[in-house]
Length: 181
Image 1 (cartoon, one colour):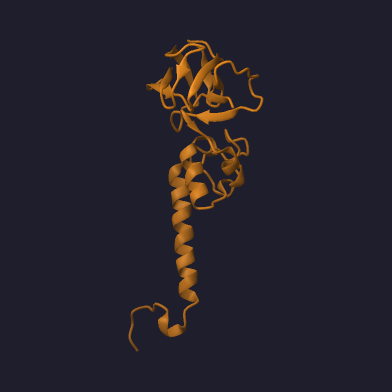
Image 2 (tube, rainbow, N blue to C red):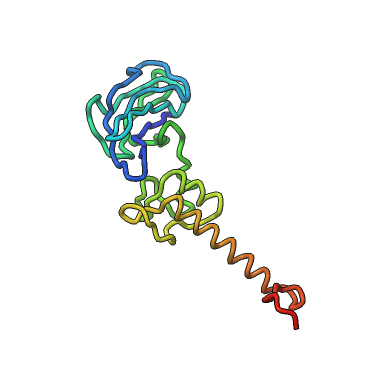
């Protein structure tokens, strides 16, 4: 099955990048995690790696073009495989496959389409702690839920569970003020 390589979001406030150079050409065999192109932002130039092993079937964005994060850049699949862009492809971000069903289960559509804008790191933390990201007020640019926001939420939820567990204890086991009668 073909894998679609998409423009990653390379930073909290970086929403687009320029394809500066393709390191592989259509038809070239690529190995998983092998660099296939360079992306340039206003702050950094980075290599994007192949999300899967196979052949670079199609390059969708030419060198020198600037595109938004989430834009399909290329398609990787088996040699000779024919694909139509967007039809049955497995999305990939920053060279790593995105678990789209897992992200949707926590209330986040890939690319932030649900209104809750999150990075892959935030989505992973939310999935690990079973948190609905759409219920967290984001403090990042444009209401984006940041790593700090999700960690604060997880920590406060854990403290609330500790308080609830303490209130279920018999009176002689509950923590007191420290004053002796």
